[in-house]
Image 1: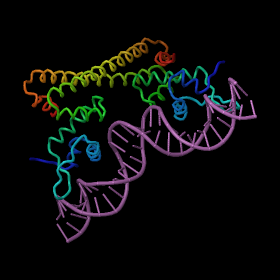
Image 2: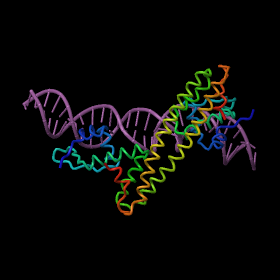
Image 3: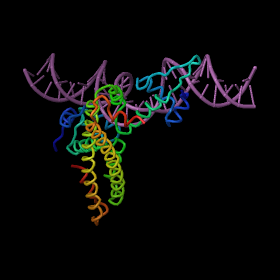
Image 4: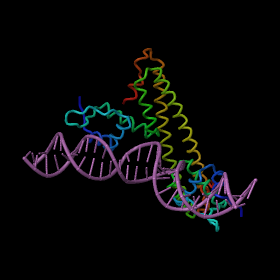
Length: 129
Length: 129
DNA sequence: CTTGACTCCGTAGTAAAGTACGGGGTTTAT
DNA sequence: ATAAACCCCGTACTTTACTACGGAGTCAAG
């Protein structure tokens, strides 16, 4: 089986070596087999696991949640679904809030554009509820 | 004018006293007038400013960004408009990101629901390349 | 066989956003 | 007028997710 050193793995994954060691310490990945040299050698399995971690992170999961996700590997699908649904709910809430803000900012800008007096900005008051 | 002590303000805003002092140190709010006793006394203006900070935070703005938002207050109207437009752009971007995330999560959940095999979760597999 | 690149390990530092602590003054209620 | 409750200040600690450092061992090229 083909294996890579930690440096090659890091380059391939575009992360720092230390990040890999960090994940190891945090229990997100196992410490790989180390032959007599003492150097870590990574299988594609571990590489893919790190890729998984990175993707989950992009989806807004914290490392803690990812540990949880990974531990669900052997758990029934419904539990994984639960986690994803929780995440979804919080994301949807954030979107709504941001859209409210977007609307508010747009309103402000319009008011600004209709303002003849440059020294008295309507946004100033609008920002202070 | 009615004022409150830091403790009352904190209770009202449901944050810690130390958080208020922390915002002061970070320049998000001014240190309020302190009479001979040395105690801070907060006007409703400052209370509202903190409320604004909290709201902006819930919307995903960092304190650094909020400092920026708040700095809109002292600028002439055209500059305020500029900054508001920059903010708007970043908010819109954030909304888009979150909607992408929302979509990805929904897809996963649907796949999960259509999965007859509870022991073999498509979410976990989807994230494993 | 030596030089440079790579790896090991443990420890320390970073940024963000607080939170806690402790020794001292002040206010308020009894 | 005294104890409880509140506030002052500076400093230190917390969490998350890394990132950096430094001395020592190892491997690969010339």
